[in-house]
Image 1 (cartoon, rainbow over the protein chains, first blue to last red):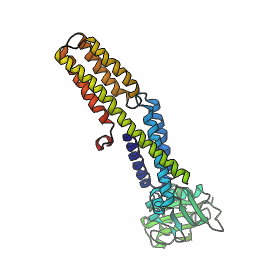
Image 2 (image 1 turned 180 degrees about the horizontal axis):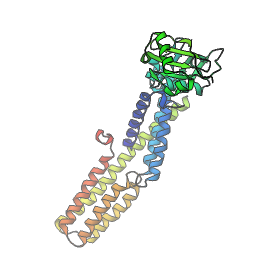
Image 3 (image 1 turned 180 degrees about the vertical axis):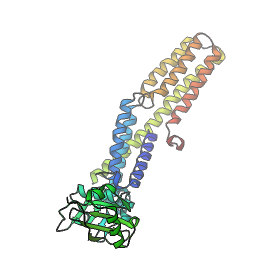
Image 4 (image 1 turned 45 degrees about the horizontal axis):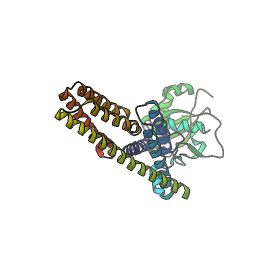
Length: 223
Length: 125
């Protein structure tokens, strides 16, 4: 029985490390250790129930082991603040007044399109609708919004140096027009972290490692 | 907070107590069973074993296995059952060499089974 306990503890710790390494995009709305407990409890409860050759006590001991580990993690959370960061992670500020922090995005295994999607889910349809944007330790997105939000949906034309051809045609912007725009900015496409255009031709433009700029472009379509 | 700590410590103590109990219980039960099989083995070796000796071991094992099934997987119990029944049928037909072979396997199982559930690195990994 002690064997089952230790095996359960090993699986628990392994899952915890793996979930932490996977970053916030994989977690959803739970803390990493809560997510692991949810995964394990369901399986642990099912296996001894379904397989009559395994004593039911095996499942019970495993679930008690999970409970003890949960309590221990919770107490460590309360008593040792550095441990909280190790177990649950820290919030990551991905948008600052300088623009998008690419390093923080990469650290959490996210890209610009994930960020834009999170922002839309939170009710922000333009990257400069917020002063600060951050991913909480539980994977949720929070933002400090600007007093005045834009009133048009922005679409990404360039995401991490890659052109989105579909969005380019949606905006009614030609490839040549875009290349001219980039030439004016003195940058090659792969050096652009993000470029979005909204229905008013307002451009959010950020080169890698630089502050973002608000520019404008003649868009063929209005939306 | 205090309640949670007490609850956690109580759960840990309860688990530790239970683990020690299970370990001691398995060792004791399999030691007794090993003793009985060993006695039968010696009688088979001498050629004096009869059906009554086999029945005595069978009755003892039947009493033990109903409780052991709560603590170890049923497959392990089935392996012991299988070998033991084979040995008993050879004793009844006085085919002692084959009975000895099966009893030897049962003895090894009685020695090894509790070990398979002990807290050892090879079992954990």
